[in-house]
Image 1 (cartoon, rainbow, N blue to C red):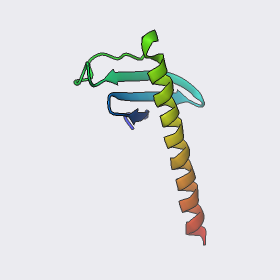
Image 2 (cartoon, rainbow, N blue to C red):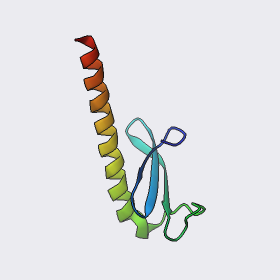
Image 3 (cartoon, rainbow, N blue to C red):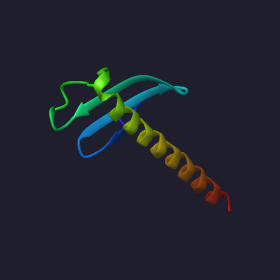
Length: 79
């Protein structure tokens, strides 16, 4: 997480998104192969949309897992 956003990283990219409710309000995508210092946000580039969709799905899966794990943990505390 970075300043309230959630992120996903793979071997090449670092992606982060911020939401209000269920709506994504901001995105950042950095290509570490071409921009290792993360100076250029590629999130608005049409050519990078497939990468954004893939990594956004990873963020959603990560958040779903964290919510499930938290609920399981809280449930176990009750017993």
